[in-house]
Length: 76
Image 1 (cartoon, rainbow, N blue to C red):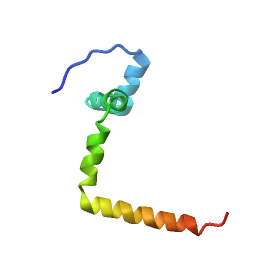
Image 2: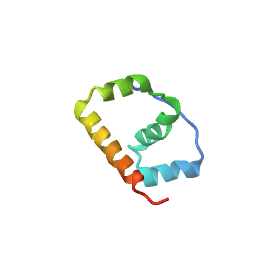
Image 3: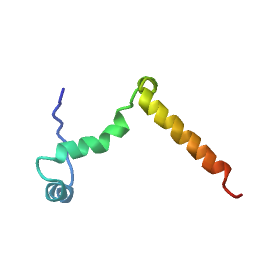
């Protein structure tokens, strides 16, 4: 569900948003900037769902094994 929000900003910022972002794209721009600071994902659920993706898990395991092999051969 979408909600309308009225905010007050400096005129120079307002003009910059219109010029750089575009008048019909400002809401999406602001939402994408703000979202990570106010919406906390349910990481436990997300990790659980990711672990059920067999192909992805196999690729992650292969990547980890290759990475550890590379590290083992590095000079110290």
